[in-house]
Length: 345
Image 1 (cartoon, helix red, strand yellow):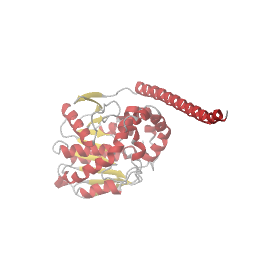
Image 2 (cartoon, rainbow, N blue to C red; image 1 turned 60 degrees about the vertical axis):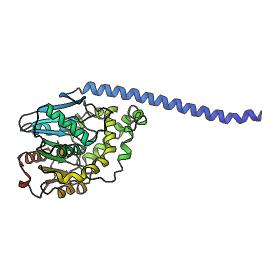
Image 3 (tube, rainbow, N blue to C red; image 1 turned 180 degrees about the vertical axis):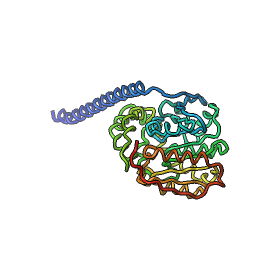
Image 4 (tube, rainbow, N blue to C red; image 1 turned 90 degrees about the horizontal axis):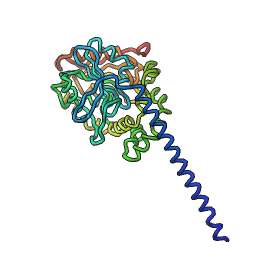
């Protein structure tokens, strides 16, 4: 009898553990169903709006508008073409330029094969081949945030191909970043796959408003972005993997590029906000400007990370400057500070 009673606590403990396991599995299954439904709905509501180009077995999605000198837009981490759409920059620039905005590999409707480590250099080579396939020569490259690393890589690897650079809110030098270990787990094989198809999109949706306040701050979130940007497209499992992988690659990518910046001889327009909460403008943009004696630096007062939303006209002016600059000998150590824009789109 005493021996039988000794087994009762163990049996109860095992029963509770089984209950927790069954409950956890059921919760993950429910989360997976929700994520699947949200992903399908997002893709149904937001079909591809542009064209596709196949390069090296990878299909890239892009939109093209306007005529004239080609301007190529490369978005930041976690975003896609619609970021430039909702900022109004595509509409503004296409009045005077031929504008091509890519979904970078893994974002929007562009593929991102898992057989490749998509460093900035790998993406730059893919974008370069795509542009050649499209018959485009000597484009102006505009990169925002992580997209600046791709733009820089393409300019460094193909210095005779790229006409000029416009770099927005870029991350150029390795620094300690506490956000990397928080956002990179979905890129881990197996465990990350489980997270991406279950809890990560739901957590991402819950924190989305706070993330937007941080990346847009100190300005309020653009009303057009808030109303028109397809949030669940960015929270699809495939895009979360791309975003997590790029978060993990960000510091080593900057480390690999920083020793080569001095090789740049093309016009470089550097733009940033003085109140960026994502990257330190002094450590990043101002330092890069100091290293490139022929670059120009434009600082927007009270500007955050999303300066193309806060001040698209200023960004267009930067593109105009990059389009008219013709040689390093015509460029000097120029720095401009713009007043805070009165409103955002």
